[in-house]
View 1 (tube, rainbow, N blue to C red):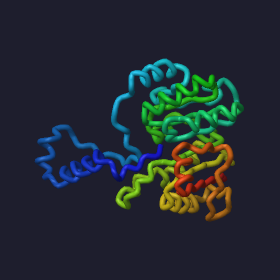
View 2: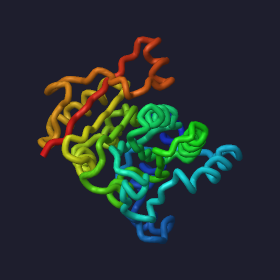
View 3: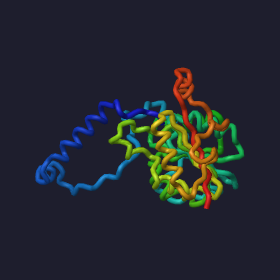
Length: 261
């Protein structure tokens, strides 16, 4: 899900519009917004613009019946969803899905649930999964926070993965980073005891932020030892973006924390 937002002109324009609205008088705002103004929650993502291509839409429609999970259907049961008892891995923000499909292919004994807000990425993941004949993968096309709160069983997942989330480089945007104390506790709520929370980022200040947040959590222990980053485990595939970064000498930081009571 890597996509630096700091150089996005559309986002900057949205910020300027928001600032202009904040500077307006209440009367002026009421004229432009006759409906009551609702307080917006801070989100850690921006839904990318643009429609799906005809091919992406075709793949989405063809594969959703098998791979898709609906937020509106509420709390699921993993054994019912996959038809077996297994270790379940949750991944948020899988981008175009190639690495998640590869993990599901290499670990047929496990079941995987991906959560992504970008429909073209969901379409691509389902297409790749169908081409590989995978049965151990399902997907939500929704906000992860809502899915975690309304759909995922509590204390049941074996692992939770968050790879290369939006870093929100600017200091004023740091509050939008998904890794915050509250999010860490929401992840803990869906993990079973000894389940692990695995993060990775190629932005060192964000890695430092992740480390600071997670070291402060009392119900997690650092798998690499207190204050340490973890070597990339073999089960996390190298993404094309990461391979390019390595060639250019860019660093990548993995963090793995085990849930404890």
